[in-house]
Length: 489
Image (tube, rainbow, N blue to C red; front, top):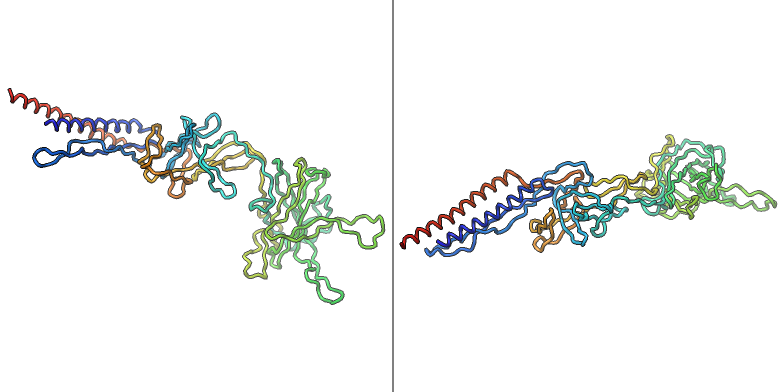
């Protein structure tokens, strides 16, 4: 009979504690990122009743399971309100360096400009390599506000994505301009077609460079007077000169009000209009002819071709005023082609062409940027935090990391929607959002609690009835004991 008292007592205790868990779930029905807990009961060690049959000694709470199902989303107005759609946790770190995990994405800026929780825990992100857009380095806090994007000068074209790139068509029916080039003061009538492009020096100053194209006169192959045979390579056909032009006031030592040719090169096309070669050129003053009398004025400068290194675009040095150095800028007009090589994968169509249509620019651009101050941020589904600067540039400031666990329900609950890694949960598996099973990030959204009130009310009623029944077991056992004692009297 005493055993029934202890059995009932265990039920009263277990279901009383169960009610605490149910009450906590109901209390957190509106807590962002909260995951409800479920009580798992188990019977106590069986003992003999004296009739040859073993029976349970009562009940106890075997475990309290944290159920990590997806909660619904609620839309907000803040870019820094984040929700994870799928598997994983945000990483947040306190000022002592301790790393915790959470599904609650109510982040904001602290006084230093870092993204953090209301309790001052820093959201963890990784740096992003600008060249390949891949996440690099360890998790760290990310400072967003008050960022300044440093200036970047236009590159030399050797590194992919740098320098000036032009895609256009040059009219094959264009006529050779009648007026010769004056490299110190170029006029529009000296070339057939031009386009402009903005480049940047090492201080972030913007400079406009005009790229002008001039049709060259076709010249037949020269004849060797000794042999009477044609001299290979002397024919000029389907060729254009191009020049990089800069206002004189933009250059050190330049003459204001003039347009100076600071460099150029040669473009050669096949008969079908596809680009064959893009050769660099050098502006030089040719020597006087032999026997020229003293005092003969120097000949006007000319552009002469130079040898080309495969894969290296034509580079022109510009000494912009105030930059303090000569800046080498690469000019890329396409890869060209070799029609005599059947294995050449190049098409001659990826840059400049010479077809019998009007001269027209398809695309022109250059890398580099002025310095800029952050104006706005955008958080993408892959966790990228992009900053929009007043210079017009958009730059990835970092990428939020997502951590998952093989046994996420074994994480230790720390309160305030925080979890800590345990031996049973396994080590955190870090990756970018959307990769290797990780969820994506939704900005201007928050994940609601996954508590379902109807289910919790049912559990509450069940717990209440179970508590009452076990309490009845105790009182009934007490009455039986009392009757047994009365039998002695």
